[in-house]
Length: 262
Image 1 (cartoon, one colour):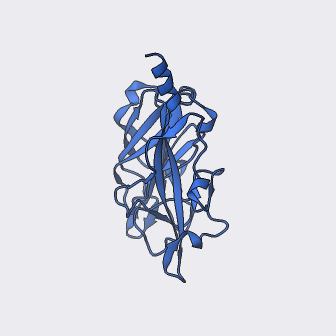
Image 2 (tube, one colour):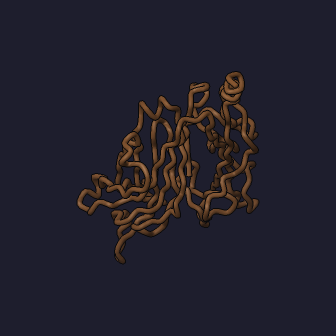
Image 3 (cartoon, helix red, strand yellow):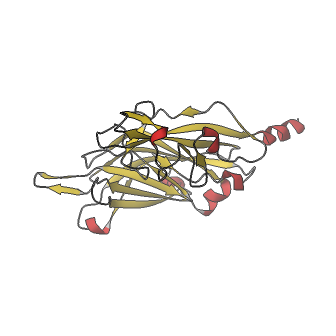
C-alpha cells in the first residue's frame, strides 16, 4: 500500500472530506502471464484522485483476486472534492522481470450518488488486452461529511542485508527512500523529519500507531524496490520493506469558535 500527496498545509482550516474506498475483489481479469500451462496474472490496484495515489498489495497467480475488504482513505479538502471528483482505478499485472502490464481501468465520478456504496464496475481493457472480455472490480465507495479532522501518514522503511542477515534502516542506500518518509519533500533518518507540516491550530488526537494491515506481520509490506508494487508476505527475492504509521489531526480553533458561541 502506498499513498502520496498530503498537501494539508496549503488549506489551513478548510474542512476536509474523507473519501473511503473498500477494495473487495475483481474477477475475469486478462491473463497477463502466458505459459505453456495456460496463463494467469499477479494483479494489484492503483487508486488516484486529485494529487493522491494509493496502491494495493499484489495478489499472486490469479485472475480473480480477493483483497479481503482492504480500505483506502483519502483526506481531501472540500474544494478538492468539488474540483476533481474523479476516482481513477487501474488494475496492473506485476512482473518481476519486465515492466508491469496495465490490465484495465475505470473512472468513477464520486459526486454521483448512484456510484457510491457497494458497486461492481466494468473495467475498460488496456489496448494490449482489447481482445479480452472486460474484467470487473467490486468497490464500496463513501464520501464523509465535511470535517475539521484529517488523517496523516508517515512511512517507515528498511532494507535487508544479506551480509548481516537482518532488516535495518542502517542498510538503506543513498538512492533509497529515507528511513522515515511522507512524500518527496518530507523525510529523513528520524521520525520527526517526516511528519508533515500542519496548519496553525491543528493538534494530534492521539499517539502515532502503525497500520496493522490484515495478512501482514506487524504491518510490513515487502518489495523489490521502494517504487513497489508491494506484497503482504516476504519472498526470498524481496530486499526492502515499508509500513505505514497513522495519526489524526484536529482543528482546535473550531472548538474555540464553538465555545465562544455558547
